[in-house]
Length: 130
Ligand SMILES: [Zn+2]
Ligand SMILES: [Zn+2]
Image (tube, helix red, strand yellow):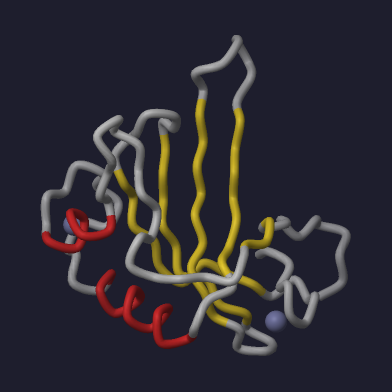
């Protein structure tokens, strides 16, 4: 569970996800649909992890977007058409559409969907009251 940026309760959970191949900077890239069980806020998030720095230096970025609900719905419904969402090497149309890269091999994130900024996903600590 993660903290919801709207109601601030630790009720934000990952609904579905799509693993994408490593890119120019990141070893792991996952596109996620996340939603709050309390206030129903629903959006897209990106998890990226890299182990390319110094030894034991793993960097992780996990952030969500503030974006129009119809964009979220559109991407969320696309994800349902991939039969292997946890296979980064899946070559289906959904993986190809959402995994596009530039000429340097860097993932373009979500070029077809505008957003009004991002927020960092904070994992709920075990001591938090729900
Ligand atoms: Zn909420
Ligand atoms: Zn796929």
